[in-house]
Image (spheres, rainbow, N blue to C red):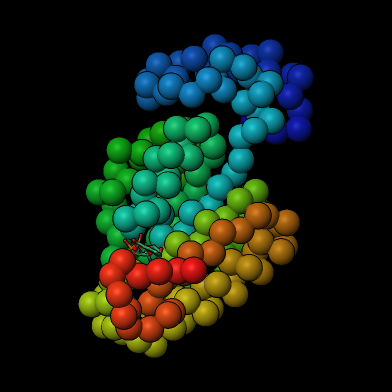
Amino acid sequence: MNQTEEGSSCRNAPSYLFGIQKRFNWEHTYVNSCKHWVRNMKRVLITGGAGFLGSHLCDRLIKDGHDVLCVDNFFTGSKTNIAHLIGHPYFELMRHDVTFPLYVEVDWIFNLACPASPIHYQRDPVQTTKTSVHGAINMLGLAKRVKARIFQASTSEVYGDPEMHPQQET
Ligand SMILES: NC(=O)c1ccc[n+]([C@@H]2O[C@H](COP(=O)([O-])OP(=O)(O)OC[C@H]3O[C@@H](n4cnc5c(N)ncnc54)[C@H](O)[C@@H]3O)[C@@H](O)[C@H]2O)c1
């Protein structure tokens, strides 16, 4: 749906929106207000979308009525985390490694692609570094090109070995 042509697309929208709402049991109120929904719907790229945080974020953004592109190389993530979203009209899954450039048109980017657990990120330190550095550069480049808003995940590991638990970040 063209997000700028609200007038023409909105006239037909409510019937299928209510169909989608019924099929996926959506609760969000946007469905009841087509114009509001179209204006607020974002095309969202979630890298690492099949991981722990990413899969929950996919759920949340789909529930809020956004169009989600989940990108993952399945290094630590799993299709089972997002299996329930496959077939949803506003969910797309792409196998891709963020160390390689990606050209997609999106409004928001959440760059969560990086193994979080020490046993995983220490297994191949070179790949972990490439994912963190090249992945961030690729996503920042994409954000700049398409003028998308970007969220970059980090980790408290950057502070070194914790001296207290839970670790303070202030
Ligand atoms: N889980 C936490 O409590 C927590 C806390 C603070 C920060 N973070 C950060 O959030 C991010 C995600 O954490 P998580 O717990 O969801 O980790 P996770 O390991 O469950 O998810 C990471 C996802 O990224 C994917 N991935 C890894 N390398 C990739 C690559 N090169 N290309 C594409 N996909 C790739 C994995 O397959 C996986 O699906 C990490 O950067 C982590 O450091 C996590």
